[in-house]
Amino acid sequence: MSDDAKGFRLFLVGPMGSGKSTVGRHLAGLLDCPFIDSDAEIESRAGADIPWIFDVEGEEGFRRRETTVLKDFVEHPGAVIATGGGAIVAAENREMMARAGVVVFLKVSVAQQLKRTGSGEGRPLLQQGGRKETLKQLMAEREPLYRALADVIISAGGGNARKVAGQIEAVLRERGLIPRHDGEY
Image 1: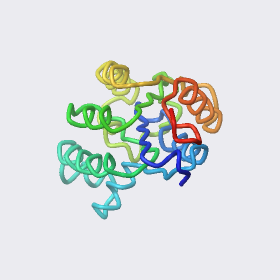
Image 2: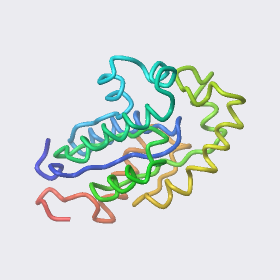
Image 3: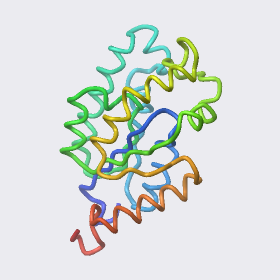
């Protein structure tokens, strides 16, 4: 990890299908720091996939696990962290992210989400009712929270992940939200 990335935490937030994990990997490469996927970490710690966690513990149990993982991430010395789409629902999570780092909201339309989430397999919230209606409802509930929390809002619907990561890096540098190579902002 480069000296300028030490201590820098960036949280990617946004709805499912916005590209948080894919963009996050590219962005971590650009910033020369580790990438952490909160959903992957939850699965690793549980020894089970997210659908199983939802089946056994419900959404409430999953959200408790999510908060526990985020508590560990805010102590990480520096990383790009992709959060789950619902991580912003808990006020405690929003407060942790706002306090611990820079938050980037990857904005996409419901139509783009439908395309990117395919059949919804592996996404427990899309297994209840119509996918489009569910995505619309989640967007209506969560978008104000994403916007209120975000230091930066990036449209992630048009470009490929590398391009979106490059846009994020450029905006962060332009706004002085990531340190320069001399360690100053």
